[in-house]
Amino acid sequence: NKKILVALDLGTKTGIATFGLDGQLIKRYTAQFDRDSQAQNLFNLLRGFLTPNMIVAWEEPFGKYGQHVMQRLVGAVQCACELIGCDDVPMNVVTIKKHATGYGLASKDHMIIAAKTKWGGEEWDEHQADACWIGQAAQELVLDTQPTKENDDVKRVLINMLAEICGSLIFATLFWFV
Image 1: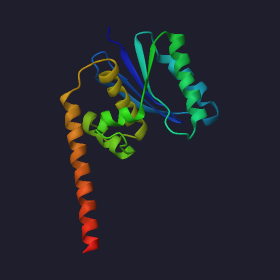
Image 2 (image 1 turned 180 degrees about the vertical axis):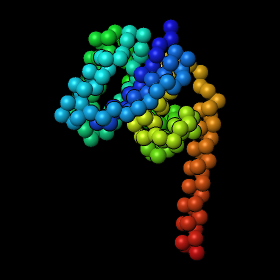
Image 3 (image 1 turned 90 degrees about the horizontal axis):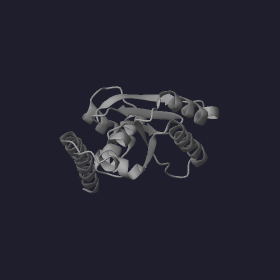
Image 4 (image 1 turned 90 degrees about the vertical axis):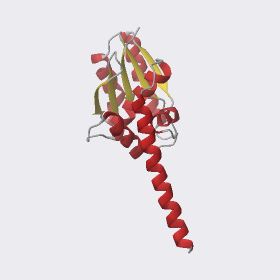
C-alpha cells in the first residue's frame, strides 16, 4: 500500500519535499514562518494539503538549542497528521546524514552537494536538501523500498571529495613540519 511521502526539515525555515507513489521527488521548497506563530502556521500549512494517503517523515530535534520551539513544531506535525488521518515517522538526524553521505556528522554543505548530485538542479538550500534526504531515508529505511544505484553514486562522489580534502590537510600538515 504505497503512499505519497511528505518530508519535513523543521525549523523557522522548514524544508518540505514531496515524493510520489513511485518514490520520485515531486517538489521541494522552503517555507519560512514567523517566529511568534510558526507552529500554528506549520499546522495550517499541513492541514491545507495533507490527505489520508500520505505519510509524513520529519527530523527528530537534535541538541539543546531551541528545544521548546522544535517540540511545538513536532506537536504541530503530529496534530495535523492525527486530524487528517495520515501516519508520521520521526527520523534520527545522524541516520539521515549517514544515509545521504555515508557520514553521520556530515555538514550542511555536504548534504547540499549530495542532494545536487542525486536530484540535480542548482538552487538548493540546506532545508530543502535535508528534507529530501529525510524523505529518501524514510523511503528506504522505514517504508522498505530498495536503495537505488544513484545513492551509491552519491556516496562515491562524497567519499572522493572527503578523501581529497583529507589528503590536502595531510599534505598541508606535512609541509608545515618540513
